[in-house]
Amino acid sequence: MELKIYKDKAEVAKYFAIYLKELIRTNDKLTIALSGGSTPKVIFDYIAENFNDLDWSKVFLYWGDERCVPPTNEQSNYLMTVEHLISKIDIPKENIFRVLGEECPNEEAKRYAMVLNETLEIEHDVPQFDLVILGMGDDGHTASIFPHEINLWDAAESCVVATHPESAQKRVSITGKIINNAKQVAFLVTGASKAEKVDEIINTAEVSKNYPATLVKPTSGNLYWFLDEDAAEKIK
Ligand code: 6PG
Image 1 (cartoon, rainbow, N blue to C red):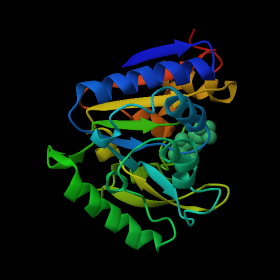
Image 2 (cartoon, rainbow, N blue to C red; image 1 turned 90 degrees about the vertical axis):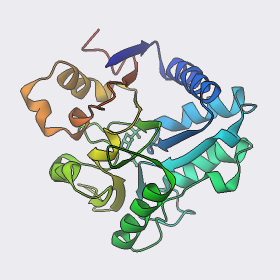
Image 3 (cartoon, protein in one colour; image 1 turned 45 degrees about the horizontal axis):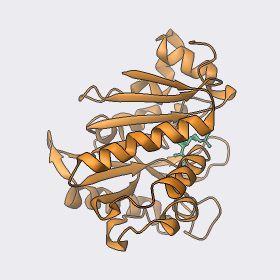
Image 4 (cartoon, rainbow, N blue to C red; image 1 turned 90 degrees about the horizontal axis):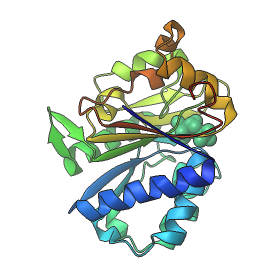
């Protein structure tokens, strides 16, 4: 596990983009599970503005989780990614594997698990991403595995249906076996509201056992925390 602490969100965006550019440059093919929420917006904007000349034909985009809403809904992680990245880079449509948020959540979780099985490398009998990008909620959730459903992390399935603790919104999320089977995992975590959980997880506080983000331990050992100083406030 490596901690990468930068001054602010803009610097996190810059250095994560450089990290991603290097991965794209040094791999013939790169399969990526994207995170949702707000943090990726600045990072996608930076990549689109500074690295839209990369060979995106080598990159295959998936989502680690999606809100069960249509792709036109402002809550859609897919829509956010189209607006901040996909619409600004030259990536083949067939390289994009969207979670169909508008479909029946249970059916879509099954379908997306099959997509992963059919299109990703299989390592240790499990689909393997080259890179899984994760965010972390103020409650210690990651992807869409929330503390009140932490058991979903160990599900036998590759994808599950989760429920947001406040809004009860349904989500489709990859599970722990997919996340921890990835060649590389990168957390993008910014803002003071995350500092307490970052501290408890990094310093393995007893309470952190309740946080799904604590369970992110890729067997490859390649885990990177991209943090801004606010999120790293308590571990600096
Ligand atoms: C989602 C995410 C989720 C997100 C965290 C952090 O769909 O909401 O994938 O896991 O990464 O909630 O969200 P922010 O970046 O908005 O703080």
